[in-house]
Each structure stands twice: as structure tokens, then as C-alpha cells.
Length: 375
View 1 (tube, helix red, strand yellow):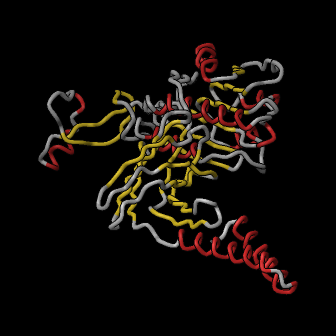
View 2: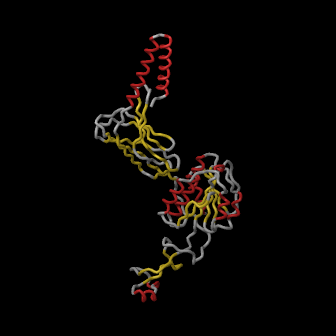
């Protein structure tokens, strides 16, 4: 297709030809013919379609915000002619990455490596590769797409935080799970005897009925749940980077609890986001869900959501500099421990009885202040 310059030369050529023919001057006609010929040559220049096969690899497919991610293009020239001097643009999110392709000999594969942006969380669509072929004078260009689309998932950045302990013992006959730590408190299930089991836990009646030694599996059911409430109201954050930092902090708290096999629940103004029973395998699920979280106009305030969730365990509320935390004192009666985290506050917030307040501008400050919140 013609560029703006090509359309301009074509239009001027038509005007010159009409004026020269009407006035009887040969010079405008010659200039018009030259313009038409140049446009036609430019179109013929961009007409051939390079026969290429493009395969892309993204390493890794999931990455923490700010970490390195690379795209690798494997381009194969399946034609009979050598191709050189080609430039391409690989779509990446809302922008493009300029990729300079090396000379491609017939039936040879060349690879090109480039960095992918990871400054923002979310799903980043990568591809397809757009090969732009233009004539030397920029009169015409032709864009062709190669390869498939892929997705890079940029997840929150995290720091290692110790578990926020609960200040109250749970009911001994509370719900039990297979991931609960072994203990001597609550009956969970019957299982076959294995060498090393305490003989005092053998269930003789079931053993006689099945013909196999069966033992009672006892677990410690008093696992405090960590509830994390993220204020996703865009008006609470003066800057988009503040919300990114809030999600990073929430991911750090959630990952710290899940890594120690404690249940985690994450909610926003839109409702529940993810709830896990506890286990290191849950970290992947939590980070994937938080990677897609966005700030927008929400129907409910974060503290209103916190009042509707199931009571008990620890509560962590994250909000921006303009978020409201003055009403958080009413939550102290519903949870064993409450921590409010404000992101880059404009001024120090008021102290709330029985509630730990953390004001942070980066994850290092969160890590330093978290020890005080635990105490």
C-alpha cells in the first residue's frame, strides 16, 4: 500500500498531467509521468512476499514484576532467494518492539533475542511479528504478519515475610484438611498402619473388620487464616505505581502464609479473589490471580468488604494514601490481629488502638516494619 508520501506524489502527478495537457506544456506531463513511474516501481518493489517461517519462545512465561524476560525468534527462510536488510516489529502489549532480522539464506534458521517489558503486572500479549517491507524512497510499504500470539504473565514482586501469628486458639474440633500438620489434637481420618506409627492410635475395631491394621490420623486443626483485603478503588491511589506496590505487598503477605501451609484468603472491593487451604503449591495460584488485578471504580470500600468476610484469624488491609482507615478500629473485635498498610502516605496516619499501622514506600520498608507488626 502507498504511504502518505506515495499518495501525495500520485495526486500531484495527476494534477500536473491535467494541467500540462490542458495548457499544452510538455514539462508538467513529463514530471507527472516520472511521478507515476516512481509510484508503480515502489509498489512492485514491495509486492514480493518473503517466504518465512517464524517461531517464538518466551523465557520464562511467568515472571515477577521488574525481572528479566526474553523473547527469542527463530526465523527460517523457506524461499529460494537470500533475504537481507529486513526489519520487523513484534507486537508487545500496546506497543511494539523493533527487531532487526539478520540476513537469511535459503533453508537456514536464524535466531534473534530481545528483552520484553516487565515493569507492569498483567497479561502481556506478544506477537504476531509484523514484517514491514518498504521501497528505498518510502513511497510504498507492505506489512505482513508471521508467527502466533503468545502471553507473558507478569506477576507481583514479593519479599520474604514471616507468618503473622493469630492471637487466639481455634476450636479444637474445627475443620480439618489433608494439608494440616500432624498432631495429637483432632481426629481427621482412618488410614493404614505404617512402620513408626504410635501403637496407641491403632483403631482395633476397624482393624478387625478390615483385616488390616488401621490407625487414627490426628491433626492440629487450629490453623489461623490470613485474610488480605486490597483496596482496588483507583481514587485511593494518587499514582498508578502506588497500586502496583500495594499488590506487591499483598502478594508478599499471602506468599509468606501459604509457604508455611496456612490458609489464605484475598478479597477486594469486587468480592473474593482467591481462597486457599494452605500449602506451598497455593503460592502459584495466588500470584497468578494477583497478576490480573486492576484498580478501578469499585462499588464497595475495602473496609466494608472486610466486615462481611468470615471472622477469625489475622486481617491485613492494604490501601493507598487516600484510602480510609479511620474506621478500621471496628474490625478489631472480629479478628485476632489486624494490620493496616498504607502506601506512600502524604502524612502520618492516626494511631488506632489494637491495630498495627504500617506506612511504606517500598518493599524494603515493609519487610523492616513487618517485624514490629508481629510483635
